[in-house]
Length: 305
Image 1 (cartoon, rainbow, N blue to C red):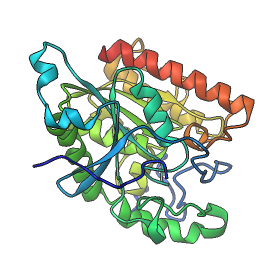
Image 2 (tube, rainbow, N blue to C red):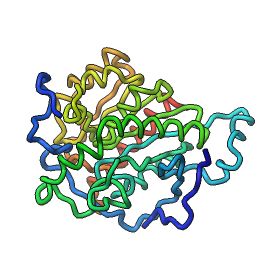
Image 3 (spheres, rainbow, N blue to C red):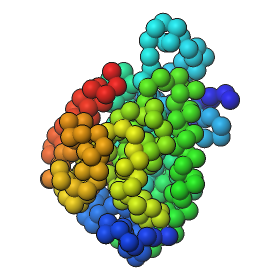
């Protein structure tokens, strides 16, 4: 099927209870209390474009339309194209600095792909995906659970991540894949990793892999099905029980891939959401974002390049 650039688009502009980590039915948040809310994109103008493939949309950066027209030239030249699939938080594929983060990773030589991720957008969402920009859990939290149950239903997410991998390999032309997940996106990326062995490394920024419980599964069993090592970068208000060095999620990965391959670094002074939604004028946020990006680049390079 044809991979199309969307012309004229402005890229700038049922709970389980047996497991002790499963969310209570009344807990509709995917983010811990105190997490940052939605953020605008500021003055940054993304450098990528939107492609459409099989009626699904993707923000793509680090590769131009010419690759679509000349797909295969990299392989013919004896080179390989490495792509990162980046899944966003619940505000979707164009919220806050998510595309800026993608562009920064693309500068390292990767093609970076952000899928339009949710089955439905709440009240139009943000650029047609996820939550709407003014949504807050404090004022609008009652809307979240019913929306997420549909928008993030497992059959949809399974199909979405499968389509994203097909897009990256057959349309973009990638021969090797990594995954980066942000909050909700770390859960989606873990689902992808459990289904696709050609994803060889994963990074989770303030991850919310525990969403698996809200969607009727067991998060530890999901993590055990992952087919690649991960680097977790939790915020100060993310659960030490889950993402700490001895956290159950971290240890599930260590048991499978070894402690030399699995990493975790807690950003204690940051609140969940800081990578795409942190205050771009706050020096501490800027420093934490820079450190997280450097750690991400180093970990990805070790596994992909």
